[in-house]
Length: 102
Image (cartoon, rainbow, N blue to C red; front, side, top):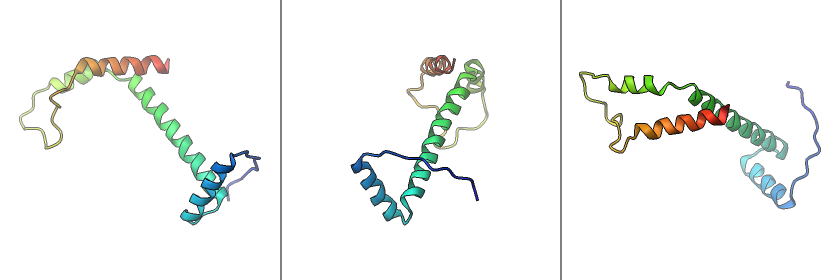
């Protein structure tokens, strides 16, 4: 079994009541509900940081070269380049993400 530690947690009364209500609906204890909620929040934060770091390492020029390749078959349905695709907007987004990481 994983090691655990005790933490005194101060919650607003209304927040605690809502958490207890949802935990009961889910068929779990308040403790387990809070553990899962914290784990989900940590995963979301780590995922966002991961994608920001990946975006900062992107090579927009290589991306454009790949898109410019001519193939001999039509794109699969749903895989077409959108009519409103703006490569400059992509570059700006990548540059912005890169500035956030550094």
